[in-house]
Amino acid sequence: MQITAALVTLLAATASAGVAPRQGGGTVNQSVIPKDFGVKAGDGKDKVQVGSCSTPANKLIPCYCPPAPDSPEFLQKLTKALSDGFILSKEQVLLPITLDKFNDASDTSVPTQKLRATAMIQVMQNFNLTTQGVGCPGASVPILGAMQQSGKIGGDTSGASNLG
Ligand SMILES: *[C@@H]1O[C@H](CO)[C@@H](O)[C@H](O)[C@H]1NC(C)=O
Ligand SMILES: *[C@@H]1O[C@H](CO)[C@@H](O)[C@H](O)[C@H]1NC(C)=O
Image (cartoon, rainbow, N blue to C red):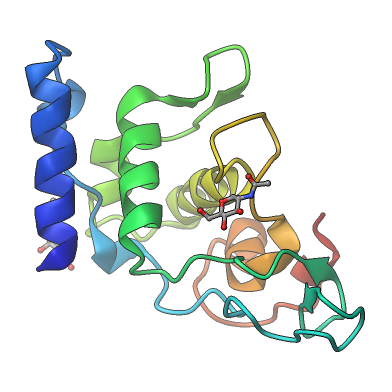
């Protein structure tokens, strides 16, 4: 409920600013997002380095990473990126999949799952929306890394733990 309200507010703000919503102005379909990213924010705190958090593979990550799969902030940023087709600017981060295609839960093909994972990782890596690359590193979302490589949700995340 909270999420829906926040997204409605966001979309209302966009509409009142006179920006035509693209692709029907929909919101991201949570049913195609994995329920677990493999790491929770705060995991591994002080384990590798005092004051830092870390992944099961002992990679240092910021303690706010990653946002939960149902985090309103993550869902809003993902919706906006997929609607715009880019993050920050077209010259910086282009998304490889549209909101409509991302949301079509009937499409669970390997190529589409890979594109969904890429889009979510792009949002993570630029999560702060300040400077390109300021956000949550790929290592903080091993489930998405594995999904990007295999096109499947669930399974081996060991290869993905090497993501930067
Ligand atoms: C989201 O996925 C569900 C199936 O899990 C589907 O019924 C629904 O229509 C989808 N919503 C959108 C907006 O595509
Ligand atoms: C990035 O965003 C997170 C979550 O919104 C925040 O906790 C963190 O302080 C921000 N970090 C930087 C470097 O802006």
